Image (cartoon, rainbow, N blue to C red; front, top):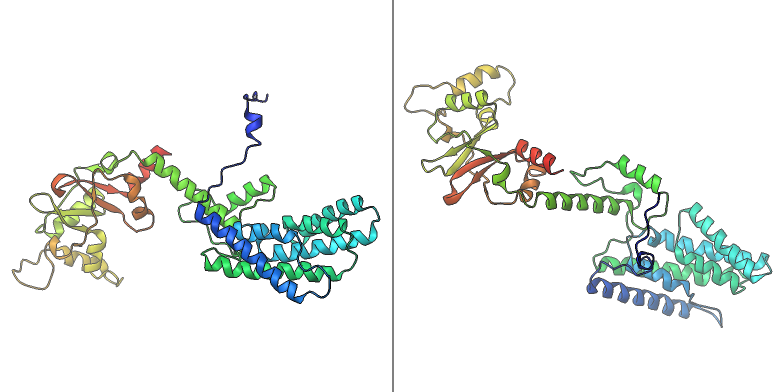
Length: 373
């Protein structure tokens, strides 16, 4: 059963949508379109002979696409040149073969769209090109090359130069060479392909941009849901710590017994001075060499009893001194990139006077994401 239409909703469907581009982008597109048409007009007028036409009206519509929406699949060079050229060819053929201008115009537009679909050069101004040639009774095929194809080529050349100079990628990479989905996207390439197949309509957004936009929107959703969460809300409280002088064998026993991967190293005021991890033990015990590594590890953590020597005896000699910490009041969303892309597994959390109050781990972050999602 369909839902009742709200009063006024049918009229809102006819209202123009808000353009989500600023004044600078609008000015950039307008200036580019004007320059592109001017270049094509001046050069083609110089090349024209006698009273033959040197500029076609559909070029104005092509300029809107090339300069205002350069990422659109309908605005790519092959779409502009191929779409306008084959549509002009279809229009001339219909003008020659169909005596009635009304039938010739309708047939030209329909055949032009079908041909552009087949040649993968769908370009909306191509419909206008086919209509112009059929309705105008253009009966010579030279019109296809000049001015139709020549106008289009010059406009594309101007579009390439202007868009690149103003920071817009043009031509836009085709689907076959699109970049992979952004890291952390909640959907796969196959998911996107299946949705697009079910949609079954021409989408005026390149596939790679669509994927990037969807992933960015997903990230905004995460940040919105996580926006109220602070590190203090999800961190592990009262973390196990060691001091600079803690013997190596004690620190190793803590790591193994508590099944954790890192121990904050604190001073008497519980300020973080370093962190010792399983990786620190493995690195200093030279476990890159596989032969005899259990014996080397046991020898490394075993106290030597000597008062002097090169062998490390306490945590402070092997700990990592440069430690990234975060405030307990810091929004959790700000730390997600560190765990997702920065390679961090644990971040000490500090409170007033920079004293350690907790530990934020990947497990804490994953749990919070599950609860928020």
